View 1 (tube, one colour):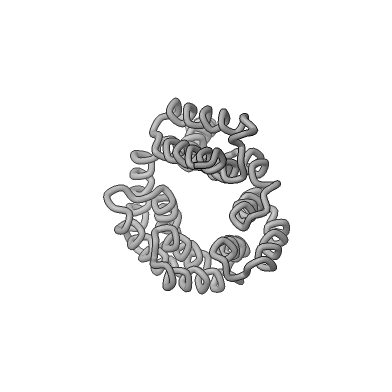
View 2: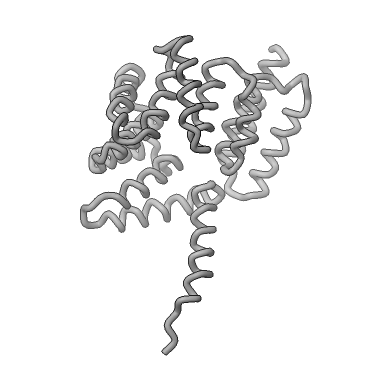
Length: 242
């Protein structure tokens, strides 16, 4: 096995440790291992940096770190991550430029199709139907994986079809087993919040509770905790004294 391939596999192992970690010390330990791998020029390969970008994105609030990992990469996979990063920092103009480059290289490649879905969903209702069309075509070709079902749900939700989106998420949760993935739970909470049907608030609270229990260190949970603390701090200022 070449050194380059070996470091890439090691990086994937670190990513798995990071994603499975349920405590901050365990996540910090995984990050330290990853940074040690990146610090060594012999193991800081394009594949290692691509994996590092995924980890930094999962950590939340580290877009600059993630972008640094992929800005010099020119594979479709590197460019696809770059599209996601630019969308997350509200630069859809740059994301579309990168998507255009990807299409010029291979418009039918899966990374290009996935990146296009991200861009179209970010654009809103005007382009969400195209995103749903693309991801359903991918599902027909490769099977309805939880990732593709989540992407379909997002596209449907952006289009305003929350009931169909919820059905996709239910299918994704069933495929994932007893513990649905973080994306499935976050999307379920968001879509339940938008549904007008009775019981939707109960569904939202259930999804949030499951998220807290299964992924306590996830950026969504951390962000929710910060919001709740800030809300409580501000709300006491407006308590009506009898």
